Length: 287
Image 1 (tube, helix red, strand yellow):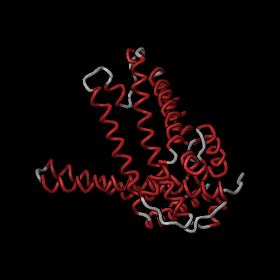
Image 2 (cartoon, helix red, strand yellow; image 1 turned 60 degrees about the horizontal axis):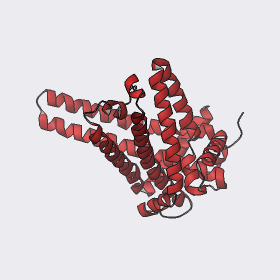
Image 3 (tube, helix red, strand yellow; image 1 turned 180 degrees about the vertical axis):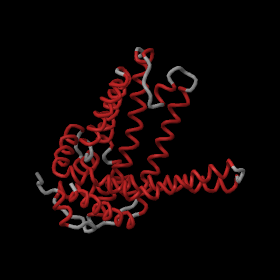
Image 4 (spheres, helix red, strand yellow; image 1 turned 135 degrees about the vertical axis):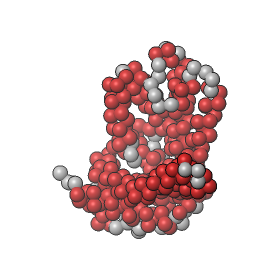
């Protein structure tokens, strides 16, 4: 376990060096987040004032009256589908750029967007699958109350792990949803330690800056309460900007790690920015 944690941390550090070469990769999660806000607004506006606004927009349970209305399922599924499509599209663009860099190229934003656009059928298909799974988990959570929340949470975690490598499979192999799922689980079986522990490494890298940002945010709120409004607003703005930047870095590093592990597993190629022994150890058969 300690060896896997060490490898995961090393993958994170090497992914950071890749990010420093292509800082524009941060724009993909930024644009994705902005588009998701637009999607939220486009669904929230017509639903506002209706009895189904909270049902569709929040993360709580669906009440029994809403469960008996087929329209709720249609709207919720549509919301999930559009949201997942946006996320998957920009994740595909980011991973495509990371793979271009790993293969010796110098990617641009247009390269990533072009690669994702060429995979629209696969992205749409996977967004439909993701929306279906999301809707099913929501129904389980709502119908069974506390037990349903636990079951839905566990199933959601298993689904997230099993689909860890789906996006690079979509981008590179043009696979449909079933084949992409099978390939993702196959790769994960070989690299489960580094694939999952690398998330710990990314979290470790971003923990201290995030903690400091929240301290600044608390200081800003305190300053406003003590009538130091200008100082308080400045501190809050700086804190929120820092939190946003940290979240963008975390999301981008995660995609870079996924791209590196996938490239080695699928093609046996070691990115020039990565250490060969590190990736070989990542896929070693450790009982």
